Amino acid sequence: MISLDVTGRAPIYEQLCRGICGEIAMGLLKENSRLPAARVLAKELRINPNTVAKAYAALERDGVIYSVAGIGCFVAEQRSGVYKRLTGEFAQKALEAYRAGVPVEELRKVLEQVCSGEGSAAGEGVKDDD
Image 1 (spheres, rainbow, N blue to C red):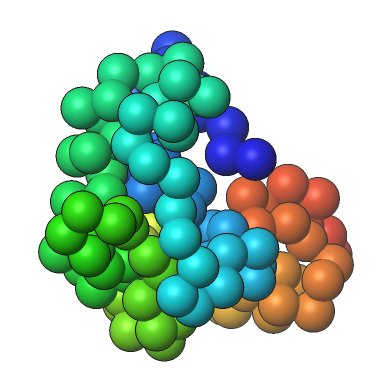
Image 2: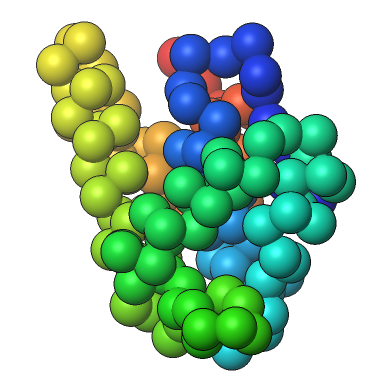
């Protein structure tokens, strides 16, 4: 289930995009599986249907999903849009951390810990060897 932080700084549609990409990356949403209709998802998440439509449009533009007129939206090939979107977000966050003074070696350590299952994707619980 996608969770949204309505009090956070990130726009709701971007949070929804990240949530859908996350579900695809984790295998919860498979290629060619149908996404809920915008109105249905909006009602479930208690947000405006236009917000869901905006997220779906952004995901389609990025190649993460595709739409079939009169039928709905579906998950595209997983390596296409999701890969580009997630690696782009990762690069942006890594650059932010680097500019904030986090040493490259520390960034590598965090990535290795996350990939080995020792830390979470949000960086919580990442071991500090110091």
